[in-house]
Amino acid sequence: MKLEKGSVARIVFPLAGSAMLLSPVPMLEYFAAATEQPSPGDTSAEDLLIDKFAAVRAKLSSSDPSKVPVTLRLADLLSERARKSSQHQIEFPTQLHPTQHQNDRARAIDLYLSVVDSAPADNQARIYLQVAHLYELNGEVDKAISSYEKLPALKVVGEAQLAEAEFARAEIYLRGRQLARARPLYQRLINGARPDLQGLAAHRLAWVDFHESRFKEAVEELVNILRSPRLLRRGTGAPSGESSGPDAQFQEEVSRDLATFMVKRGIQPDDRATLYELSPASCRIENLRTLAGEAERLGQSENALSIWRFLGEQQKGELDRCESWVHVARLEMASQKNSESLAAYRQAASAWERNGSCREERRCQDLRQLQKNFLLEWNSAQKENPSAELISAYEVYHRQFPSDDLMTIQMAQAARLRRDFARAFASLVEAAQNPGEHQEQALLAAIEIAEVAKNTNWLKQALELYVGKSDGAASDCGGAEGTDLGGGAEAW
Image 1 (cartoon, rainbow, N blue to C red):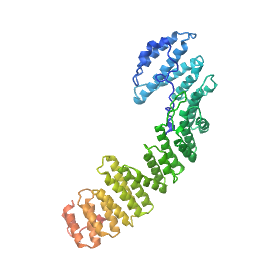
Image 2: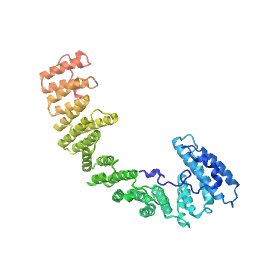
Image 3: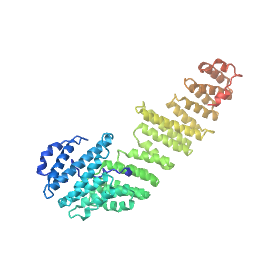
């Protein structure tokens, strides 16, 4: 959720084309056919009707009983045209003047306010709600608040309408970070007259606590929403206050926020189970991945390890399992648990093999790089004293990606440091067979290994391989005494 953007989709206010403020009077039936099926973004019907209603209104005296309904209908049409042109400008920003919809809203506001006192008492609350909404859309939030605050003084106003106005005010305060003003409004709404706003109010109250750095309270409030069916509803704008059933999309949104809040509060041992329990199936794994990734990023290693291990066991997709086990291996390596790290990496490699041919090319490239980075980190951590587990991990990687000659050369280097010359020489000979940018490096390194090991058979094999494979002139290796191999091999 990004409150800073000030989404106004939370409530469906009565607009022309959706819910009319007043039923059309008989004299307006002539124009009804023109508005039956308007095309998205097409305001031609509104253009025509606005001109006609404006002309009709101009001829009506102030005492004419049709003046109020005609004015309200004209204001409705202007509001609807503003909505359509605003949406059209979002999609095609160069085709409309940026203030066209703002001018229509301002004109509609003037019309609504010119007749609100003369309108039937049971319509005045809806008119003020509409006016306030238009003020909000035009960025005049102070005037919007003033309009919302007029509702309690009206002779006829429903509890549901009062709740709607309070919620709208609270939203304005929250977006403006006026948290002390927003809090009491949300608190009243949680048990108020609009069941369809109760869950939203509870959700926003949690965000108030979050912005006040009350992370523990914010987490508790979201957990309460996810465990309360009556709060798992999102506003529908039903003026009667009727509520729908649990909103799956709202449940997903709250559960994602819960993962974020848990991270800010500090992840606790039972958070994994709580988040898994309360998240809907559609985003359960995604939420846990978010929690694990953030815990790892923030250095909460034990919690991250627990969650990644759980994901490695629970996820269905083999690529997802592979990724999770690489994270486990990395965290175990960082804790200097070499055996555990190697075991986790073997789990990752098994998942990779079970996946078979890769249909998600980009995902597979990313996973291959993740595995490579893990080995490079491990190699860097044990640069002077590589462990047997690191060599084994290199071999696991090599079985999956035998064409990665650079990693094969690095495996040989680590084996050399462990004085495992046989393994190092065999790896270099294999890499030297492959044409490419690393072939020369592998050829020279194989010669050096043979010399260090004082193995004449290896040296003969390495020199013959160099002569056969190297792009250099034969004179470069014309004799063992005159060959400058040491400097070149150091580069590997």
